[in-house]
Image 1 (cartoon, rainbow, N blue to C red):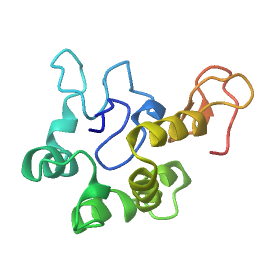
Image 2: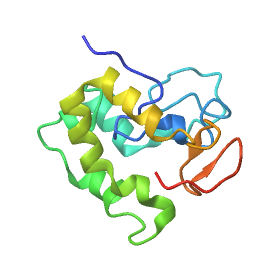
Image 3: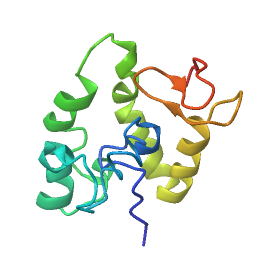
Image 4: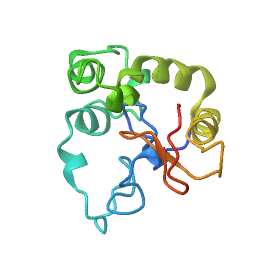
Amino acid sequence: MEILANELAPCGVFCGACPSFNKTCLGCPSESQKQKRKSKWDCTIWKCCYEEKNIKYCGYCIQFPCEKINKKTIDSHPGETRFKYRHEIPDNNKKLKKLGVEKYLKYEKKRWLCPFCKGIVFFYHYRCSKCGKEVVV
């Protein structure tokens, strides 16, 4: 049985690269009421996977990619580089299905690691959280 990692959102986004992770949010899969960010529980993708279909990741759904995920992620903010991570959702889910959760999570952790100082590169600005350098992910 595959794990449900707090660093991996049901849409396939690596929560570990989010500037809010482990600060105001404990990751999309976390159900802890101690976190400040609670907006994820209103997310249509979160509700669809966890409440409606009882699946861990969109990529495992027979309807993927569906209108919900296309609207919220793939089709959102076209051409805006700060949302590049959203546009990678279809490929991320294919890779997740192929590798499995543990290997995919290792891949994502390595992918979002700063090559200069080994800090975490945050999406939106694609800068290292530690050294501040801009990094192409």
